[in-house]
Image (cartoon, helix red, strand yellow):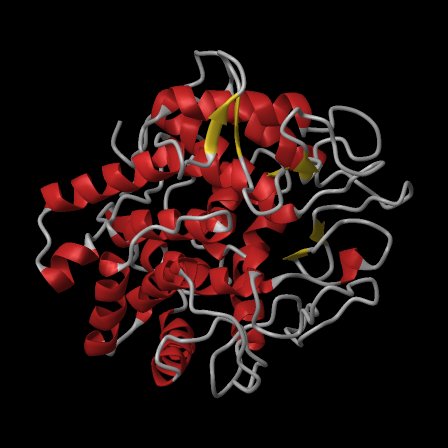
Length: 408
């Protein structure tokens, strides 16, 4: 089945509302409307499609097949998990990323095995957390913590990958993917807070909350959890709360623009709903007001929105120009900073090379864009025990930049 493009998309359960503009911003000109996905390795570097396909197969084998470097592990004939090699656990972030990678590469068997594991061990099917996923489990499936809450970036990717699976493969197999996506989306927006659990999105701000719990986490966000391109599709494909979902893409775009530092372009790991850096009182392990770990994904989110929908090109070009010039001035050396660029720590990672190359899609400065595309092509996928997070972001980014991360 071809990816969705010009208002035509097959697959069971697709209720696509063709290229609707909800009035929050002008209609864009991205791949959602045209069906065209650019291979930037070819455009900028002259890499052939075969060379691109071979590289993607190499990266797939690195993370899903090869002993010593893989993150994908089957624990039965029908279930599998993505392993966080650094923390020695299984997280919704990695599981949902793994499913997205599988649907993009047409790996249905692996997709179903990951989803079956997540649904069996992580999904709350009753109680106050119904519809959410326990964000952290042991490889044997046991939940870590007494009643662990969710990390909502996982929910976002689970829902989106299930929709894509429905549209690419249909709903006649082991799972009705579309029904499961819509059920989760409905369940996570049916909480009134009376039991200490809230909706996944703060209904006043129209923004995704960091954790929908009554410890205050419902009242702030993580900029990297804001995926306007995904929310555009939810507004079209959900069978509930359509008016609410129609307001979320623009809210996410505004949040990302507000959170980006006016000089460096850097994003904080956590922010208020106004985009101001935020440090929760409970967080003691590091300063989330800095550009740290989560924040590397903001460039990937913005680049994806730019080439899928193209509704916010001026601001997105501005943000990415500032950000990518900053990293070049730092000589691609460090990985964490204060938002003004001071107090650099850590190393520039493979995941950053990937996410920033996706952000380069937004650039008017084609020379700078080429430098980032070339750096991504030349970097090897990470190895070692800390390969998990950087590796997953790297692999998603390779799909984006090669034109293989598509709307299905």
